[in-house]
Length: 512
Image (cartoon, rainbow, N blue to C red; front, side):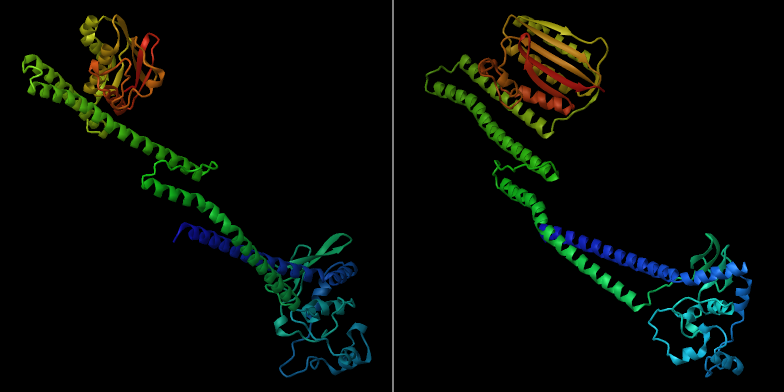
């Protein structure tokens, strides 16, 4: 599968999971909130009952008589018996004649049938312990409770309102910590509480329908949001994949040899960094390809010149133009030696670049090693007319290096000074210790090297033709080999224009 459908699928699946979780949490939160609202609404609907209880407490000053009245409720009806048949006939006749409080005339309830009870609706059967207790005291019960006052409540409504004292101790009914409570206030002071067990599920049809409609609306909104996310994700995924597609095409071109391929760098993100690194890689490959071509051309040229001279000398001797004597053979030997030197330098440089040169490093006193190399070249430098000035640090400078390769490095640099410095001239060798490294600086006097050629001195077979040509015997490989040796010691080497009028070479090596 391509990266575009993968990215699109991942974004859509993630969005779907997040939206599903959000829908579930919203539904759960709304259901809990609705249930809490219903419980609070039921609790607030008992305000009249709370006022009646406050009036009772104001008259009596305590709850004892109310508790006693609630305990004197009639026994439950026997199976097959009408709810009122357990009461004495005389009591029923008195109720029918109108004796007792007007609110409890049984004949009035018989004339009008009770209204149908909605699912989840509370009736006076839900409040029967408190109703009977208040009726016994001659107090009004809450408005709207007009049915089955004297009837025993059905079994499924056994858990009803409870009465608590001001310390929340149960007086009538049961009480648990999870019950909802409503305070009974008398002159701003709490004299008791009404406790109601919280509903665990919605039972009213209107509440259930409202919750279902709300959940349906939330589902429609979530579906709409997912569609909007899909509309936004589609072009966004293409935008993210576009740089990767361009990079893929560029890599294919680079693999086919089109080394001039470059990518446009837009922004500063990881894709922009990747495009920038690709451009650097393409530039390096192009430079290496150019260097390889130039390397082959230079080697061909360098090998062709001595071979052409040797061939010409031999042909001249064969044709009798030059006599076959010791002088002719000596000229041939010089050209062969030059050719052999060039081949040896090429072989050594190639070994250095591919890591075939062996390095046996150990702790090495660089001050002593540089001093010995200068002394070894002192005689030949004096014959050339070059005056040597040295400046070394007094303390030992210890580096982790291969003595043979450091000697080879210094020998190449001092030999270059000997070859390319005009006599009389000067040579300056300085050794400076830094905090974490040591600098070896070798400078000579005129002739100077053009500034444009300083950066190319360490390239293969490069020579400054105006002052450093084949007559000196240089092949243009010495400084390239020096660069490889320094890099193998984790150091750096660079060329600069010397204040003495010639060339300066600075080598930096890390301390041990």
